[in-house]
Image 1 (cartoon, rainbow, N blue to C red):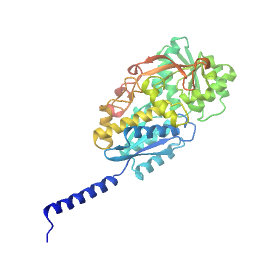
Image 2 (tube, rainbow, N blue to C red):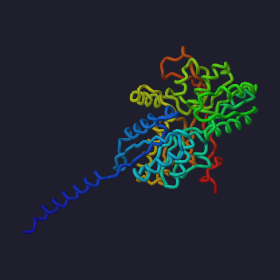
Image 3 (cartoon, one colour):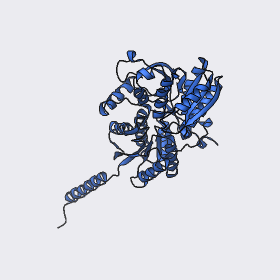
Image 4 (cartoon, rainbow, N blue to C red):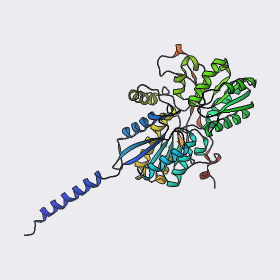
Length: 401
């Protein structure tokens, strides 16, 4: 006999429920790849804590988006562009990542962003400070969440020149970031009415900088500008102390982990610019406290904050767009407000550059610091619009007719 109608309906409903559950359980995760220096000279700037910050953003978002679980994968590019590009290919081809978070050496990030652009993959630059990311090397699917060499140079050099540091000599790390920073600082010094007497370069990861320091000292310049970062910067400042010339030093990019490595007794009094400081506001303090509770009390850097903020914003954009298609997500990222509260007046320009206010800080003396994380005195807030280039003047081909 045929089944009663209500029995057949119940059977069909049961089959549909089973099919729906199977489809949900089989939903492919949305994967985010972190391409980072996990063990080398820049691992303190980003490194494992960049991965942790990305994972925290996923957790805080709820762990799923559009019904798909979210996974974070990480690879160590060793600050080598060929290795970074190869690992990015693996993440895209084998793991099917929807987005890449890029940290470490700018040379690696630029190579990976160029590859991701061809593959129409979203990129978020959270540890690359070269202006090319949102300039000539920009991507229609890319955003740059940390200031570039131009913004750091402008934020620091003008005040130094006006304060009497008229003549400059640069010690420069010989790769894309260092040469870019020196070039931007030279323009800023001249624009402020100063002069540049010369420059000497050193290889990435140099341990002995005595000849560079002695040549810079012999130039007679008022200011020795340090166009390097990370361990290179730390070594330069430490060795400069030995020669008694630290009063002339001006650093244009200092990470919080560099200050910790130097110690307040060595670093005290140095001024530089940041876009994130953990003690800047309630949102940054609350987030930093949670991060430090999970990483052995390591103080977060600009890069760690950028990884959290960019991942949060990316997931919000995927939710808004209803897809992880890179073009649709990019449109949503530029439309949505940035909500983490870390930055002053943040917005995303057409070239992918995230514009925000920056702060000029001075390293505290040991007696003025109340704990490990109390490192800086905020001198002033610098409006982002006075530092960042408009998109149509950045050299990004996306913004030209």
